[in-house]
Length: 357
Ligand SMILES: *[C@@H]1O[C@H](CO)[C@@H](O)[C@H](O)[C@H]1NC(C)=O
Image (cartoon, helix red, strand yellow):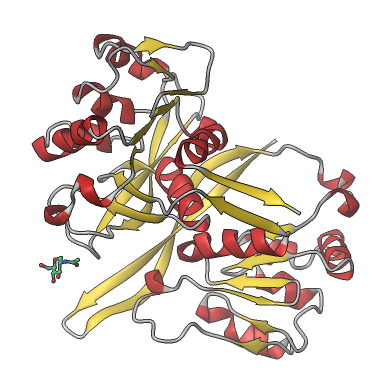
C-alpha cells in the first residue's frame, strides 16, 4: 500500500517593509510504503507517537479508531508529537484542556476552543524563522517543518535520549535549485537536532535567499520522476564560505550537483575539504561533484545506476550491493532510500551518538 507525502510550500512575499506571509501552496511529494497494518497497531509496542501535519489529519480527526490510539498513548504518558495541523486530532481526542500548545497560526481558534492555551514563538518576522517545539507534559507541538530539528531534539529528550559528541561539529551543505528534497532536508534537520551547526549555501546567493527542491521518485517509469518540492532557505553568503569554518561537507543529490560542477569555487571547496582531511559526504548525484573534484580516486563508493560511470571515471571503486559506504573520511550513499544508513555512517565519522537510558 502506498501513500503520498504532501508538500506544503510556504510562499513568502518580500516587500520593502520586510517579508510578509501570504499562504502556503500544496503539491504532491514523495510516495512512501506503509510498513505496518493500521488494524494491528498495539500501543504497547511503541514508545512515542508522531502525527505529522497536512490535510489528512482532518480525515483522521473523525476516525474513532485513530482517536482511541491517540488516547491510549496519552493515558500511558508517552510523548505525542504534533506539527502544523495535526493538533486537530488532539482537540478531537479531548487532550488539549489546560495544555499549552502551538501550531500553524490558523489553528489558534481550534486550540483555544478545545480548552488549550495558545503559544506563539516571540520575535518572529517570517514563518521560516519559527524553530521552537513546545512541550507541555507529554504533548509536543510545533508549527511544522521549519521546526523539524527542534521537534526531533525534543522528542529524543522526551524518550530519555542523551546526545554524545566528541567535539562541536559544523557542517556545510552545498546545494542549489532542484536539490533532492529528502536528500537535503533529512540529514540537514537530523544533524541540527543532535546539536551540529549546519549551513546551506549555493553559488552567488546570500543568506536568506531561497532555492527550490525537487522530489525524485519511482513512479513506474524507467527513470525517477521529478516534481517541485519545498523552498529551502540559504543560511550563509556564498562569498563568505570557507573551508576553515566547517568540519564536514555534504553534497546532496538531485540536479543541483550538475549546477555546482560548473562553478569553480564549488569544485575548489570540495578539493579543499579533501586536502584538509575533513569529512566529505555525497548522496545520489552528489557523487558527480565529488568525481569532478577528484576526491573519489581509490575510494570505495556507493552510488545508483545513473552515477556508476561518473564514479568509475572519477577513479572510485564501486560497491554494488551497498546502500551506503564509508572509506576513510568519505561517505557515499545511493540516494534517499539509504538515508538512515547514511546518517548513521556520517554521525560515526563526526563522533556523534545517541543513547537511551
Ligand atoms: C551577507 O550579505 C548581506 C548582503 O550583502 C550582508 O548584509 C550581510 O552582512 C552578509 N553577511 C552575513 C553573515 O549575513
